[in-house]
Figure 1 (cartoon, one colour):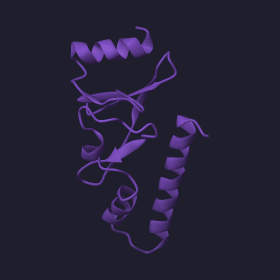
Figure 2 (tube, helix red, strand yellow):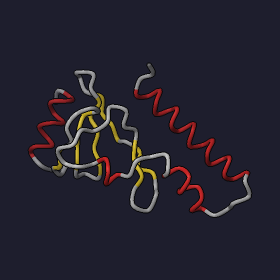
Figure 3 (tube, one colour):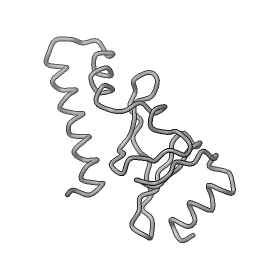
Figure 4 (spheres, one colour):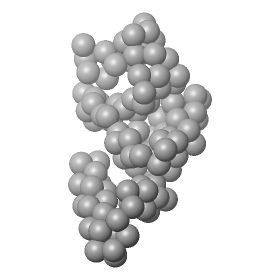
Length: 117
């Protein structure tokens, strides 16, 4: 089973292929690219809900405008992957999502536990 980096490379490759196919189709509207890609990616507001579980295969989400938001990740000493969204949410892949700003003591503690800092 491919690791997180392998899945991210695959997602990026698929996105480039989709963009290339759309470009070759003769439809030059920028929205057609976003619509096609965003339909393959879950909405950020659907994924990032306080108290819910972040999918362990999370690679990113689509914002309200259909734009892609790639996962910002940090590899933890434990082997888990810590990720954030909009400086407002954090979680490890497959773990519980917490809503707390990145400048909060709660976030800092979770990040330090991850990185050993």
